[in-house]
Structures are given as structure tokens and as C-alpha cells.
Image: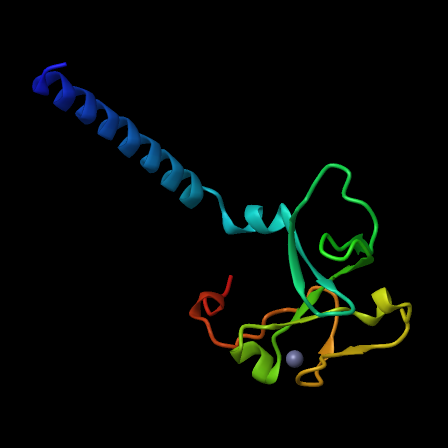
Length: 135
Ligand SMILES: [Zn+2]
């Protein structure tokens, strides 16, 4: 194989790689954030407080989910508390009392004591300029 042929081959390979990278990057940028969020769930172990990230599947069943580390059914969905210092820290994951068998008891954030409900709104004063442009 001559040097010229090697250069041609390498050049072709580089172009293919660049195209692949551009394709991957555009794919990541092209997917809206809400799509990524809708296709995944963050669950928390009710015993340890450790977070687990899952991609949603067709047969996504009822809670609790099995913890892949312990094999126990201890994973529950969380809501994010964005109140007080929690908002400044980027949110605190909280398992609602409804998942703890106490559906009629309000859930308070263990960190800041604020009331936490389903689909908590991110308060406008909790940092981040992306929420400031009203519709
Ligand atoms: Zn909080």
C-alpha cells in the first residue's frame, strides 16, 4: 500500500467520522428537552434515598419498582421541591406520602419543610432566567 493510498483512506475515514459526529450532535440538539423528560423517570429508594434513572418502557408497571441494587421493591416516583433553599440547590427529591400509604396526609419537604405536591411548579424566584419569559 503506497503512502498516497494510506492518506486517501485516512482522509475518507476522517470524513465519515466527522459526519457521524455531526449526525449524533444534531440528534441530541434536535430532541426537545420535554421529549427526553417524558421518556424517562427518576425514582428514589424509599429506604436509602438514592436516586435511580429509568427509561420508560412499554410495560412500565405500578409502583414500587424493584431496586436493581437490592432486588427489593423500594423505588418510588419523586416530586421536586423548589422552595426556599431547595430551589437554590437545584431542587430536592421528595417521595410523597401517597406513596407511603398515607394518601390523606400532606407531604412536607424533609429539607426545607415546604408543602410538596404532584407536579410542583418551579417558582419564578428560584434562579434560572429561562422561566422569566411569560407566555
Ligand atoms: Zn424543600
